[in-house]
Length: 271
Ligand SMILES: NC(=O)c1ccc[n+]([C@@H]2O[C@H](COP(=O)([O-])OP(=O)(O)OC[C@H]3O[C@@H](n4cnc5c(N)ncnc54)[C@H](OP(=O)(O)O)[C@@H]3O)[C@@H](O)[C@H]2O)c1
View 1: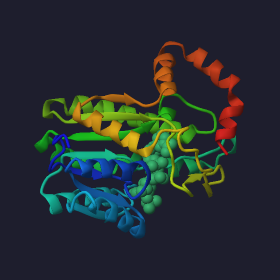
View 2: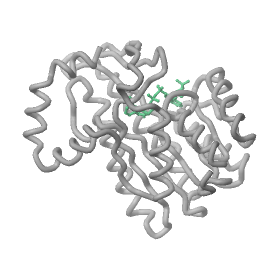
View 3: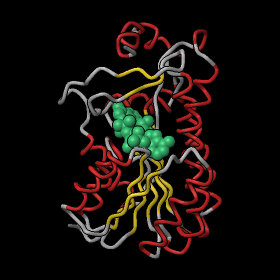
View 4: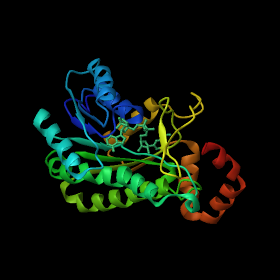
């Protein structure tokens, strides 16, 4: 244990499973006090059991952060339980599949509702609390937030929007010494039966991913903790992510050519 996170109070949105739960587990192992969040109480109960193996300082708040009042309530419950807030990890996010021409416009609304509004709703009430502790706000983005990718327009644009929000807050809160981190996550293992939004707005189950071929949730979580403890701005996971982050601003047309040449791979991954 590094003691950097000892007794720090961390709210992690969307932490009943997947990457959010892994971040909560890693923070709990480091002695942090944990506020779990998700919309399904049963999943939250299961996650809470896991956190209890590492700390008794854990609460769960069952709410949908795409709702303005729920975002506020989540932060209030954290303060009520633990008296302060040191870390907010905005992890909630939903993906989608489908080319723009085939998308129901509601797909954009659902994705932005979770990925952008589900981020700003807890962030706004968290800022006054984070000023007191000179704490951290972390945004969980995706390599899909570096450039627009085929079949992922709503997801890419919602994740790109997080960068603008993060950049604004960094400057606005510079004098209050709030740390803002932005994590570009690569393809990562997913829970069995993870859902995505299909072009017609229905929910579709994603194919399971082969362990070892993608990042583990534990690796992503450890990277998030490193970003927070070093108070870094941008952290990019995976080799392809680092190459893309370098090439995209310098040679966007080359990146487009590479994507066009590999379009079949994107289409396969979209299944
Ligand atoms: N997995 C990847 O390959 C990958 C790659 C790049 C980036 N990311 C990003 O990493 C983050 C986590 O991804 P993941 O794969 O771990 O997702 P996941 O397995 O689907 O988990 C999402 C978590 O968020 C909760 N949740 C969803 N919508 C919510 C809402 N509106 N309010 C409150 N809780 C909500 C879910 O629980 P309930 O459904 O019970 O509410 C669950 O706990 C997302 O932002 C995603 O975009 C993931």
